[in-house]
Image (cartoon, rainbow, N blue to C red; front, side):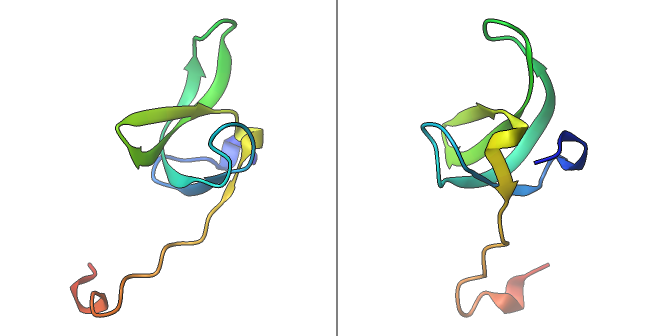
Amino acid sequence: MNLNHITPGLRVRITAGHWTGRTGSIVAVGTFEGGPMQIGVLVDIGEPLLIHELPEHLELAPEEPMPSGWAEYAL
């Protein structure tokens, strides 16, 4: 995925590494330290941790449909 098109709140799917197949939302985009400094993104996958991923390991994920009966409460 192109780093210029990644913004906070965007839903993505992880395509490589330990978390392959998981979907989540972008929390932050920037330069993070962890050995050599890397440009990457923090992804919230719905667990009590944030995942640091490289942009090339991400793809757009479709929006999750609302469970039946909840559409009337959507903002």
